[in-house]
Length: 463
Image (cartoon, rainbow, N blue to C red):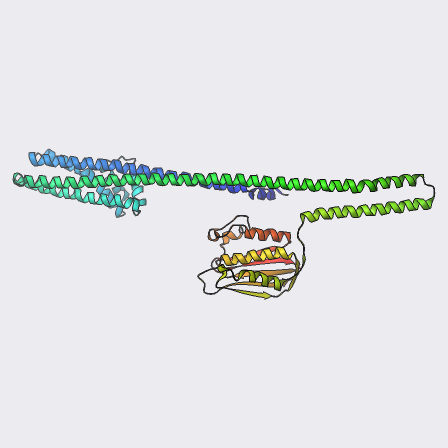
C-alpha cells in the first residue's frame, strides 16, 4: 500500500470527523463569544453614554433655571455647554441613520462625553443591530429623548429672548413650568432607555449561555459518539477475532484429527516399502501412498474452500433482469412517498450473471433515493430503469428528474454518513451500501447529475 493510500485510509477514519467537528465547533464558539463580548461592551458604553446624556441634560436645566433668576450670561454659557452633550449624541444618531460621515459620528459621540475607546464599538452595534427588534426599541426611545432635548433648546431660546427684551419676570412662572414638564418627560425617556438597554444586556447573556451550552453539548456529544463508535468497533473486532480463533481452532482440530491417521499410515507404508524386496509389493505400497496423498489433497482443498466460503457470501447465478426490475418497481411505486411519480422500465439486456440478492439491494437503494429526493415542484415526476450492453459490461441506469446533486457533493455521496445540505432526509448509509455491494460484485457505479435537473446512477457489471 502506498503512502497516499495509507493517508486516505487514515482520513477516512471517524477520528478525522471528530477532530473537524470539534475544531469547527471551537471556532464557532470563539467567534460567538468574541462578538457577544463586543456587543456587551457596546451596550455598556451606551449605558455610560446615557448617564452622561442625563447628567448633561439635567445640568443644562439647572443652568437655565439659574439664568431665569439671575440673567447672568455665565449661566447661559453653562447651559449651552451642558446641552451640547445630549446634542452631540443626537448628531451621532442622526448621522448613523442617514449613513453619513463616520468622522461626524465620532465627533458627535466625543461631544457627548463618551470615551474615545468605546466609540468604534458603539458605531458597530448601531450599524449591525439597528434593524433588529432587540435594538429598535432603545433607538426609538433615544430619538424621542432627542426631540425633547430640542424642545428644551427652543424653550431656552425663548427665555434668552425674554431676558434680552426685559420681560422675563412676567413670564418666569410660565418658563419654569415648561422646563419642569420638559424635565419630567426627558427623565421618563432616560429611564425607559436605561431599562431597554438592560433588557438587551440580559437577552444577550441569555443567548450567549444557550449558544455556549449547545456548542459544548455538541462537542461532548461528538466525543461520546466517537467513544461509543470506537467501543463498538473494538467489540466488533474482538468478536471477529473470537470467531476467527474459533474457526482456526476448528480447522486445527480437523487438520490434526484428519491428517494424523493418514500420516501414520504413510509412515507405516514407507517402513514396509523399505523392508520389502518384492517389487510388486513395493509397487502396491506406492499406489497406496499415492491414494492417501490424493485423499489428503482433496481434504486440504475442501478446508480451503470452507474457509473462503465463510468469508465470501456472494453467490452468483443467472438473473432475469425484467423480473428483478419489475419487482423493485412494484415494491416502491405504492409507497406514500411515491405518489405522483411515474415509473418506467426499458429492458435492453435480459440476463446478467451476478448475485441477485445484492443487485436487488443496490436497485432498491437507488430507487428509494430517487423517491426520497424527487422534486415536488415539477408537474411530471418520473423514475426510469434501463438496462443495456456495452462491450463486455452490462449497464443498469436508474434515471430520475428529481432535485439533482450539487457538483461539490458528487465525489462524497458514497462516503459513510455523508449527507449534503439538501439531502438531510437520509441517513448517509444508502449509497455507501450500494458502493460496498458493488465492490463485492466487482462492479462500478457512475453518477451524472445537475442541480434541479435530476440524476442518473449507472450500475456497471461484468457480463
